[in-house]
Amino acid sequence: MDIGEFVKAIAGTGHDTGTFRLPELMTYCTSQSASGVGISRDKDGEEIFLLFIAGEPQGAVLNDKAGTLCGDKAVLHLRGTELFSFHPADPERVEEYAIGCRVYDRSHLKGNPTGEIPHLSRRETAGIGILTVTVLRRNAPQAGLHVSVRKTGQLVGTDITAPTGKASFRLLFGRYDCVIMDRDHTIRHYPVSFERAGTSLAFDLANPSAGSAH
Image 1 (cartoon, helix red, strand yellow):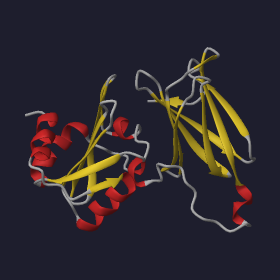
Image 2 (cartoon, one colour):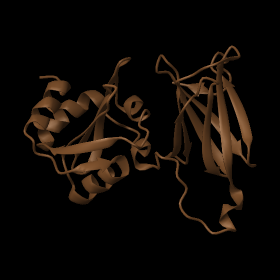
Image 3 (spheres, one colour):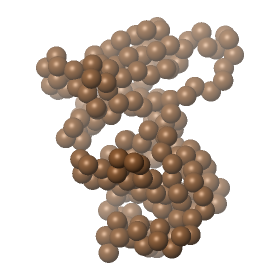
């Protein structure tokens, strides 16, 4: 039985504990020390499975028209707006399937995937602005790429590049790590210093010296 069949089997029991956005799912699983699978499916056929053991996210799988991603590469695609149904399952069974799709960097899940900034006082909000990132390849705009911004390992915003290659984020001033996933699923990291509103930065994926890839 592969993971798709496993998920279909537990979903077929009709036993789920509710529907959650990602932050709510994380809170629920942590508070209940729950083991099982969160399942999200959209109208375009995209499927996301998040595997939890004792309240901790241990595995992830994303299936869409482009293929299958597992582990950290799968959770990088989360927008934070998906709806998950949570289906309890035996932790030993979940572990069998989590081995092949292990999530190592859980900050992708435990951060702030919507990019929303908590309520701040007027004095504190003086340092908020829009950061625009343009992704290029040999000066040609790259559309449809996943871009995220992290601070000290925590996810603070995600976006998909427009036909112009642009992605935008509303952020507090400071230093960040910009993460870009290419079409071949290569992940590149670019350090960003955001010190004034309206800052625009461009990264050319054909220039290996601009950022690191793994």
